[in-house]
Length: 143
View 1 (cartoon, helix red, strand yellow):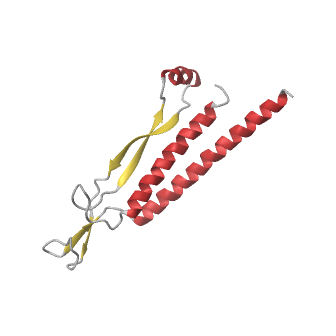
View 2 (cartoon, rainbow, N blue to C red):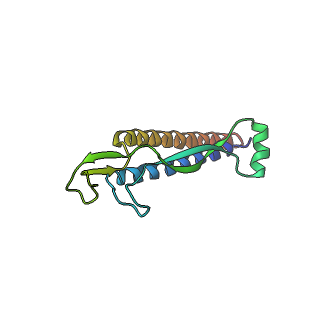
View 3 (cartoon, rainbow, N blue to C red):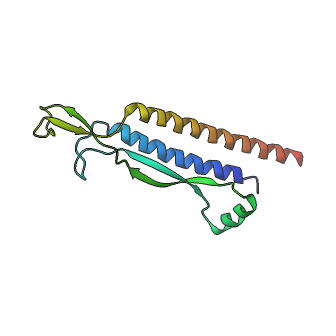
């Protein structure tokens, strides 16, 4: 394991959390969207993470590390949770009973997910800073 391994692992987490924050932002921006190009209201998106061993060289290197892996976004799923419905007969997208189907997004859950993504991003940025400080201290040994 070289000195850059921890930085590579943390940078994979930074990238994954950035994607997660983009998806959360999209969900929050579309909390009231009742029309999409696909038809119907917007549906919540969710990021699915998986551990990552991206190249053959990394596979070889990880064989010696046994279990130390980065993370990557496996996919962005569309939530199949039921849509919210509200009675609003004057809305242009209301059905014949006056019910409007709204996206299946809970603003509070999105805010909690956003805070979690932000804290995870900060923790990994701190891990990179710690690795950088350790590398600089190692270079000072040779002086």
